Image 1 (tube, helix red, strand yellow):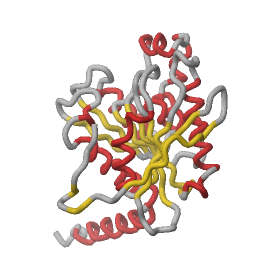
Image 2: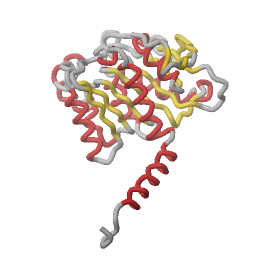
Image 3: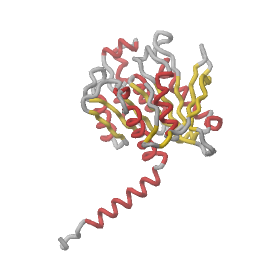
Length: 276
């Protein structure tokens, strides 16, 4: 689904796409499409690796073309990444490919024109699961933040069957297990979603906050799985995700200073004891 036209009456920036670039040689080459806004700027930009859904067994990188285009319009370099699907290769092939894409983006930061310290992940459904799991497993500064849309976060017996793994191993494939190791994450869910109940995002958000991690939650009433396909929701959610990435990482120092000034202002407005 495409979202085109104008934004508040202003033309949207032109986006250039480099399609089918190889990011990993292997049993077969794995490719990504690179989306960037046409600009004369030369400074390295923040980047987002965008991962499609499809139950780990279906889909392709073309599914995230609308998301990658919007992220590029918002000033990020967006990488729509291909990963091997189950059926072509067994688990953990999809996760291995996502972590390889992250490392390739860091290694190719100069040629991509990106800042490797500002590399984010965005994933939809199974892609959101892969984004969260990869971010938790890589550790360190490799992933600066994650936007996960209606992503499974606590896997169960049905997921063990889908992934082709033993039930005893499923906890190690659940992002909730690694809440304390996740970078800043913004979680999107609809409370009408029967495929991935909103309780999964709510639980992960609570678990991250309980151990002092940075997490935002966006819960939408009555919306079902893949609600970003509904009119306006793709852009609305991605603008929110982009703002989260800027607040927590890209413009973190500026935001922290502003937050401190706001806190000081409120403190000055509170009557001192004995003055009330």
